[in-house]
Length: 181
Ligand SMILES: CC(C)(COP(=O)(O)OP(=O)(O)OC[C@H]1O[C@@H](n2cnc3c(N)ncnc32)[C@H](O)[C@@H]1OP(=O)(O)O)[C@@H](O)C(=O)NCCC(=O)NCCS
Image (cartoon, rainbow, N blue to C red; front, top):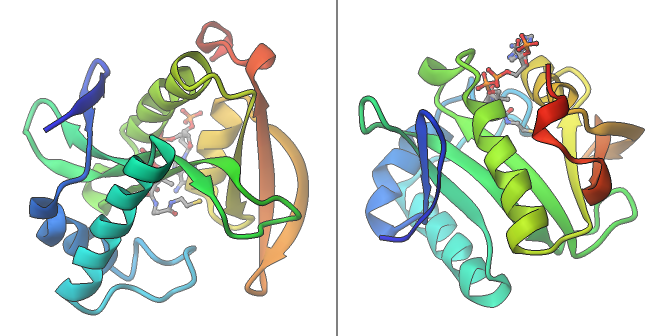
């Protein structure tokens, strides 16, 4: 199983077929989907399809979301990572997106920030990307908190499936983990 990055407390590795029940636990939780369109996963088949979809991105784009493992417990806490988004979003298509999704038990520990820092380093230094974007429901305090903490620029707001979202941008030359609070 390929490990892409290790941080102080987390392992970021490829998603594999055997993660299907962990992804189902994550994505069938209505709390997790509060700001993701309120449409939690219903079946294990959907979970397997998600993993298949991400693995297709690994082979086609060389990148996709990563399973995020808590080192201390070995628990699968959710996913973080980069994605080449081919869905038209706020006027952008085939753009580089940063996202994160964890089980509620692991919220509030700084894990999204810690893993996102590793993803930004990877996107700019290893993949050579110039820009990385993020989007969050304006009411999603957690997600907006992460983008704010990472010093993303808030560019504008837009509507995605009737949900008002903030659109964030990080440019390679502006990225430095040293400038974080
Ligand atoms: C969004 C999410 C990934 C945040 O993960 P997390 O590990 O709890 O985030 P962090 O601990 O790194 O927090 C980063 C900052 O946001 C703030 N924050 C996090 N959750 C918050 C909340 N619910 N309310 C207010 N601020 C919050 C933190 O306080 C922190 O800022 P600080 O260090 O200045 O205090 C997590 O809540 C989640 O998985 N939510 C469900 C899925 C989702 O909405 N994903 C985002 C889609 S765009």
